[in-house]
Length: 223
Ligand SMILES: *Cc1c(COP(=O)(O)O)cnc(C)c1O
Image (cartoon, rainbow, N blue to C red; front, side, top):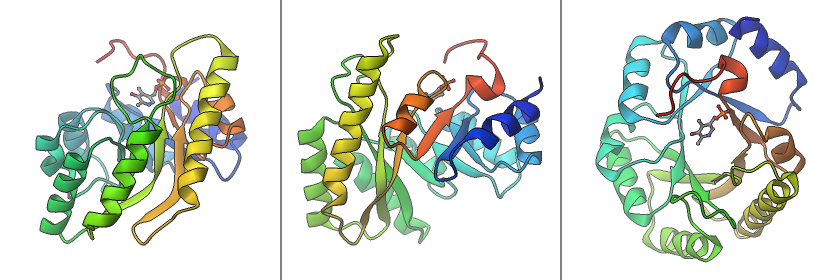
């Protein structure tokens, strides 16, 4: 089955409130265009240079989601066109996003990357760190940054109970922040779930899933 058919089948089965981000890292422009022709517009990338190259050569109404670890000194390359940064994990990064947003007079939408009980990933914040970041964000005021939710990953394991527990804990954390929404903080999106665990993620309250290999086939190399 080609990517376009896989996409149509997959998309048709998703609950309407769930946003699908097609993770196109390492995949060619041709592969992306197949989904684009089927009507898809949201694509996710992990690497700044790869996303910039794809942005430059693909249709301009694609919404580019940055989902990988973002270094402060690279924000400037994507600020002008990025639709949503899923992987914000420090105040320093927010300060730089704000600076770049100001330069382009554009409010840049972000998710805070969090983790619960998942020690494999070196990125993301635990619940205490999330709460301090949110307080600092409110205090310092960043008119060019909008926090729109959270992104999280479950441990890379076959233990579905563990995955479910982790996703549920992330959802709980998300809801606890949602109760204290402010001007530039609105918990709209909970980005969790990938090819291997998106069903559990949706059951636990995800409304944004990031799916790569199920749509495009396995990646030939892991970057
Ligand atoms: C690669 C990646 C995905 C997609 O992974 P698949 O297993 O191919 O669906 C989702 N989120 C992040 C952060 C990724 O790096």
